[in-house]
Length: 113
Length: 115
Image 1 (cartoon, each protein chain N blue to C red):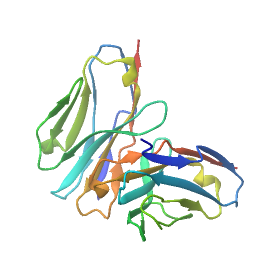
Image 2 (cartoon, each protein chain N blue to C red):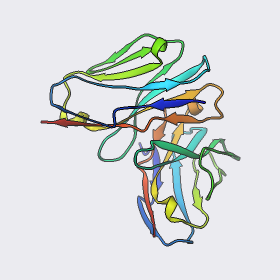
Image 3 (cartoon, helix red, strand yellow):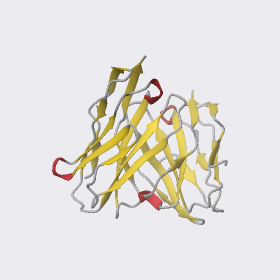
Image 4 (cartoon, rainbow over the protein chains, first blue to last red):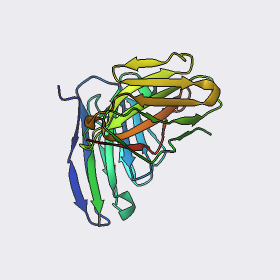
């Protein structure tokens, strides 16, 4: 039972570099989302998707891009990394959209120097 | 605007003590959902409970219980006879039925259970 799989678990970038955080789920969930977690701030929604081909912005979308070409995959792209994007990123999926139980990946710790 | 407040940043108790984590929410909507999630030291986030605004029944699951009171806009979480494995950060979250798929998260309460 893989659930939600995120890669990589750790990444160090230099300012200005780009990268993609991968997220895949094998539960056939329509709803997927990306959060960032910063100390003392809880989780903040970056982008979400309610199905293949449909994405939308969350609370803090600037500097990030997403796509949803399949039900299973929901990659998060950092276009030009900045130190302010140093954070822990979580991918989550749900069968019940935002009102349902969220299944989270293990998280990806990103450091931007 | 919606808001979730977890005023207790950190709580430390000795094993076997009971402990209550507070969650106060703000919303003007009548249909909403409240959640608790657990984040153990390993880092993953684990769903604990969901409650909708029309169901004020308290819930008990083993040593865990939840007290939902609309009159005080609170959804508190109590662990009875705490154990070291309960040590984690606990998050309370709120979403509205018509919220553009946004969950509003509290800042979390770090619970430390000492042996």
